[in-house]
Length: 286
Image 1 (cartoon, rainbow, N blue to C red):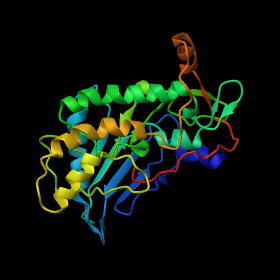
Image 2: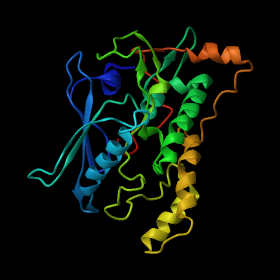
Image 3: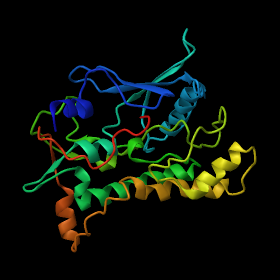
Image 4: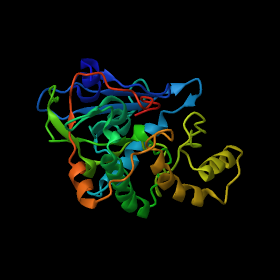
């Protein structure tokens, strides 16, 4: 990793994240020993007024966060609308996104150095397994993410230190700490929608359930689709396979369970060598 890439993933200075034009996200400055925090607000643009979605994201995270085991980002504070008319939501750092782990962080065990963390089959299957574990209690509450992808899943690192890692420091992804982010456009009973869901077909990155796209299309035409329930119930599990791009074929599974357990302990070295880019970066809002 280059110094700029290390700062982008693990840094503590204030940084504006790459997002769509409808939302603004900042990583707030944090001193050594302080936890990192992110501040988010939806904006009013030529495409429409997205500001009400900030409060909705807060209400969803606040309700799910009341369950101690919910795998979602934790709320620090919700700031009601100020003179600009834009409320803000601040959350605790949930760790690098899967997209960052996959595109910016190389993996070093002994030799060779793998270009990204999920070049190790054990890490890929650990991620898939933990996603399914995370969704089970959330789906039982009626929650459906609807935009489940590598940008919206965070995995912290071990050892958990409130400081920026130094070059060469061994670390491993903490899959047990996996959290979902960017839930404003999710569904949760009891949290009303302020308008039609502003989701669209991502033609350049096929990860969405066909039944979800059908339901969204019906909604845009002002018709209630009988397939909406089926679409939402199948959306997140189907997207689990789209965390990594379809062009990437995971390595063959390890033949013996003992070998898999050994490899699951693979560590990431925060090295300064330039990593190979295997995934597009930060496709949408954090």
